[in-house]
Length: 333
Image (cartoon, rainbow, N blue to C red):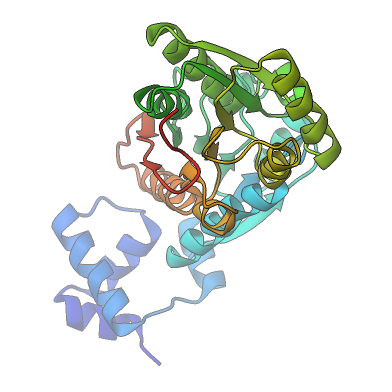
């Protein structure tokens, strides 16, 4: 079993320096800290969790707050959760998952206990009622998502505004003049959930800038709702040739509804989606799409949080640029 003295010898420092790097109790130069951490990784040193927690006054547990509200695409949310847990383990931390709609009460309960060192908060709303409490806590936090007012907060996410615009630009470049956004369920917009609102804003702004005809249609996440909406759109807008789908559970139903209505994809209607790559690749036809980078966002959120715990300055806002991958579902109008 690798001991702290082995790490110290490998890094060329004293055992107490290794202890201080682990506990954060004393200021250690960045070069020394880097050398010690490299030795820890190379030797596979794993300090005893209980002893380390006592030495550092830390629990080595992060809280991940995901209120599983109606309209949430649970499989996609779970991709974020898995990425957070995986990244936390790389930092020898565990994750406490909070899924109830406890809001401020849940935050207060966890923050007032010694259960966790820091928090990651998801399903961020534009005017999120949890923000005043997050700003007042003595524990660091990172938001996966952006509220309207992000002052004094650390936020990371895909740039959903740009993602909506990129999809419109792709359709415009292919010559489509009449398009539609089939969006999230109505309750998601009613809560002013950040990612859905930003996609809609980016879509609308790009439609105006390109001189297109385009509108936004919330849709329940059921096959019946998708079929009814597609039938209504085709009846009311016979010139519709481009569709953006931002509602993962109905990507397949929308494609099936178009086929059932006698519309070929992409010969008659081009379809672009915002969804995980795996979903886009296995659709029929394979979908042009902007991927939801759950693994990268979750991992970087944990890295930001660990830096904050270590007193390292971090950027207030991290927006990941969208990348559109063209596949078989989009073609010239």
